[in-house]
Image 1 (cartoon, rainbow, N blue to C red):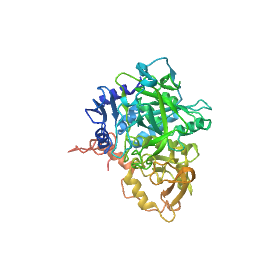
Image 2 (cartoon, one colour):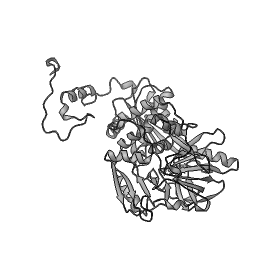
Image 3 (cartoon, rainbow, N blue to C red):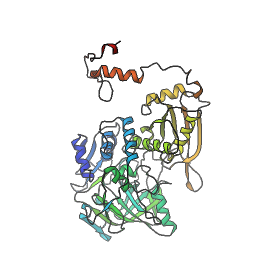
Image 4 (cartoon, one colour):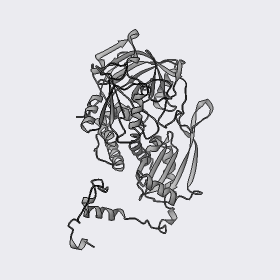
Length: 498
């Protein structure tokens, strides 16, 4: 059975031994500081905060959710023991077989256990930390999804956009230029209408994954979630907006984003690791309705210097999306892709190819820099040969150092899609943010492939044979067992021995 909600996800993570409970944290910097410290190294446990100072016991907050490849795999129903390269391949295979499963509409669910309307609405009752010392306020929406409906087509979009608490009935919302939620919002504003919105603060983390990825324009993230789960997501029509929200969500804020109304928002430490977007008037949500479960849980996803909870999951997932986009564009020879975690899973993309013709590497680099999954805030695309593991930073840097002719193999593409969150982006007219990006061919020169110096290392075939003959020295991933003290050669046919 697929996971039904955030509570089942927490229980499963606890069973895996990847959950730490923390009682009594102060939401003013202490809670956020602990989460930040747990993100200094990927693989640390998720954090479940209870008895948060100033809030009732049972009003909890979960953070550091996706800083473990095992926890990402849990949400995507993939094997838990895969390394990064195997993970990308498995996710691509799953993507190719996905058949959208629309959500199932139900009449009731746990999210309706408590309802407030009008004067009783108070969003300050839920834990909203001051995550970092430089933040301009408390943010309730970091691991949330924001649900909107396109007024022209009826398409329902669920994206992850930051939501700041201004007062009991007013929240701020920031959406970067070009994002689907902003396009939908602007359609309402062009008509002189407020944009209906539902902010889900606590849901199956799978929806957070999808809300932070480049799901294609016009596709419903709920349909994709159903395909991954193998069963429809249960949703109900929220009472104020009529928007579909997960029936087993923890907290839902309903309201509208009015045109022409703003409030000072930010600064907020974002996924690039900087306070790049500053503080300025941004749209507000007038909150008209609040729904929540007994003892609600806020899902927090803290950005900051990458890799972090807001970016680590993007590396394997975006890599698979870029790979698929390249193949759909007719680009052959792709053998691996990685979106480096230090670039927030966006800014530094590596593509490994088997070179098939002159100009192949340059074609791949330009296509990866401009396809939809690779276009937003990208800064570097590095193309390497098929003997380089794109997930291995040392191998990629080695290729850069030994196979790149800097006067011939580096190109700059100017005025590309970026965001105010990018500290190196620049604004043109009407505050349209751009960046420039580097395309690097780190492959052996095509016309020197046969004469290029040979690599001084055990080949992949030789390595496989050695691991098979000396299994005591290696684990299931082919890595050296550090605890081994003595080993003997496994039996092999005499004519196979040297």
